[in-house]
Each structure stands twice: as C-alpha cells, then as structure tokens.
Image (tube, rainbow, N blue to C red; front, side, top):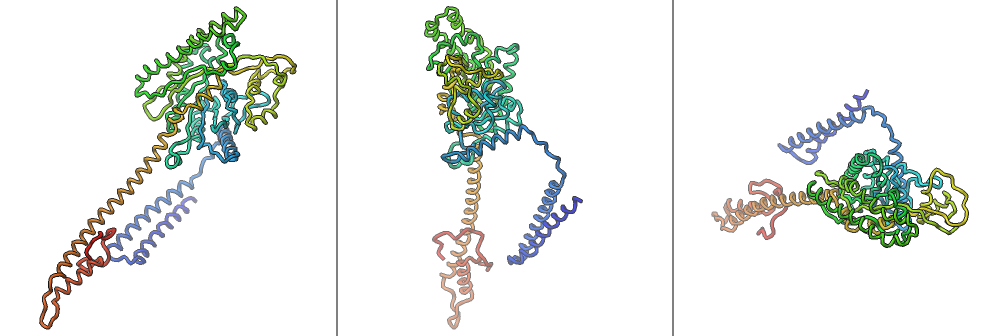
Length: 536
C-alpha cells in the first residue's frame, strides 16, 4: 500500500530530468560533445533526485507514534505566549522578549524567589504566571514573568530547574536575537542570573554534605544556560531568609529606614581564570576577604545599634549576631566556590556578587495599612504597575491562618531588609557585567559565517578575474600578431592584385578584434572582458 506513492514520486522526478536532458540541449543549440555531457549530467541529477524523493516519501509515509504531550511543557509554553502577547500589545510600542534585557531568577524550592521579586522595589508588572491565590503568594507552578524599567524578570520554579529539559526550553525561549546584534545593533540584549538560596539550607542537619551537592546541581543549570545563551553568564547569589540566623531580629530591630535599605553583601571584581588551580587560589582569597569584610562591617555597626536598645538582654543578643554569621563563612565560601567553578568546554557562569536579605517585624500605626488586601485590589495594583510593597509583604504573613478582624492601633508587619539595593543599585546598574553578555559565541558565529561567505565570494571573484586576465592577454597577443602582419606591405602581384597572404592577415586581424580566434572559432573567449588600451 505504501510503495505506490514512492514509485510514483521517484518515477515522476526521473521523467522530468529525462525530458530536460533530451529537450534542453536542443533548445539551447548545444551540439557535439557538449550535448552528451549535459545530458549525462542531467541524467545523474535525475537519478539522485529520484532517490531523494523516494527517501522523503518513505520517511513521511511511516506511521508516527502519537507524541505524549507534557502538561508541564504546555504550561510553560502558555506562560511564555502570554508574556509575548502582553509585550506586543504594550503602550508606547511593541516589545519582544529577545530584544529586552532579562534577569533569570532561579533557586531551589521554598527559597522565596517570588517574594524577592515582589519586594525588589522595581515595581514589577506581572506579564504571565500566577503570583497570588487569594491573599497569599503561592509557589510558582512553572514560571512567572514580570516587566519593570525596561527589563524582563523571568522566575523559574524550583521544580522546573530540577528537570533539565524544561529548564533548557525556558532558556532557549529567552535567548536574545542575534541577527540584529550581528549586523545592525552591534550588541545583543544582556542576560544575567539571580540565584536565591535560603540561609536555612546551611543550618539543616547534614548541611555539610547537602550544600556541595546543591551547589553542583545548580552549577549544571547555570552552565547549561551559559552555553545555550553563548555567553559568560554573570551570577548574583541572594541568600534569603537571613532572619533564620540566631539574633538576627535583635540586631536589626533598631535599624533606621535608610539603614534597612543598605546592601549587605559584596560585589566581586570582574576577572577570568585560566585554569581550575588559579581559580581555586584566587577565588578562595577573594571570597575570604569579602566574607571577613562583611563580618567586620556588622561588628563595627554594633557601636551604633547597641546604644539604641534599652534591654540589656537584647543588647547581648544583638552583639552575638556577627559571630553567628561568621560561623557560616566556611560553608558559604565552599558553596560559592563550587557554584561557579570554571569548566574546560565552552562558556560558563561567573560569580559577580553575593548578598543577604531577611525580614523583620515593624510596628505601623496607620489604620489603613491594617485592612486586608483583597485579590481584586491587588490585581488592580499589579495591572497599574504600582508596587504595593508592604501590601505584598503582608501577604507573606502566616499563609494558612485565617485573617483576623482588623482593629485600630499599632500592628506588626514584615519588612524586607537589605533587598531593594540589590536590584536597583547592583544588578540593574552593573554596566560592566551587562556589557560582558552583549556579545557571545552565538553572535560571533553569525559574524564569522557572514565574513566567511563574503571572503569566499571575493575569492571566487578574484579567481574569475585572474582567469579573465590570462585569457584576455592571449587575445591581446593574437591581435598584436595579426596587426603586425597587416602593417607589413603585402606583396603586389601582376595586375595590382594583393597577395593571398595579405588578405588572410587582414581577415585574421579583423576576426581577432571581434573576439574570434585565428583558427576561425566563433564566439568570445571565456573571459570577463578585454583590457582597456587594447589597440583594436
């Protein structure tokens, strides 16, 4: 049943080439040896074409197994399609994912990635995904995409990064456009990664074995992203849930609003390492200095904070916080070292900086802040691009407990510390790291291919011009020889007739000047033209 279409297609292709082989030479007026060469070439092409057609029909005629549709992949596709639709219909001109800078937010499950983006201070507008269900922030199902300040923030769920195929699919769909970067804009849209890891991961039993394994698994995802994007990917590590550290609340309870907005962390200088040995020595020294600097800064801050506290017990607890953080210096350093360890094949991630953030409880007196936010008002705020920072923060309060009746008076609400500056003054303002990602192997490949094609075309043109020059020099020599024969006086026979040699020389000169060979072959030589100055 399936063989008839194959033979019909192959025979039709062969018949077409046979007809061309028979009638085309006659139509072009080709005779002699060239006739059979052309017919033979067309015959060979007909056989090859018939074989290819038969192969294609055979492959297409095979029964295909029904492909099982992955529901997780479908959800990811739906999120990305919705984000593209929202960007295309944005006011002020359509935008595209591949032309906008992007921050890839990833991390293990329950590392507060979604809340970190909400509380970033960028006033992000949700493009696609689900953030709130009722009054609380829900775990990310597949991915969430935001837009803020001309930047796309793409958050991958913890379950998504555990599946290599889905993670690669997300990164591939967020790859920047390379044709425009290669030929028109000169640079592609930058890409950076923000990795969220809870500090409580370092406090769990068995953390000494689990932390290196976590770093290696996350490194695999970062390496995949770097190679798919074709860049050295800058990585910013955000250690969330720092409030799980002992004495964090006592140390931060008296911070002013300006102090709470400061950055707690370190940005590392840009540097590449040639080998793993140089990376181990240099990066270890840099991380040690950075962690010791953070601990010294917190220790010196005690001179300002302790006098603000009236309780002696609280002062003693606040005094111990820098030491508690210092106890995690070694496992944090080991984690950061393993996370961005350079490889030997292709592009890879590099550590740009690491920072800490946590939550403290603050008292508010405004009764309007005590009202429970409704899904409708929250959705309106997101659509309007409003930040709703403290409203979103209140949504992080005990998620399973029902909302109590609101009464007037002071009330404790959560406030995120040391977070806003990470997005606004570090990531978005890091022109050096962004510049590293504006070019890469994908853009360079397009440029090399274009340059190779131009070089090949120029080489073909030069070879053609060389062949033309050689052929035209031969014509030049023939014409000069014929002209010398014409210039010499031909012998005059009796009766005043010119000899046969003189007539033949004149005819040869005229034929050479018109592109004919001395032997009388018709047509012009296979050349581009006759050099200028030829005395014809």
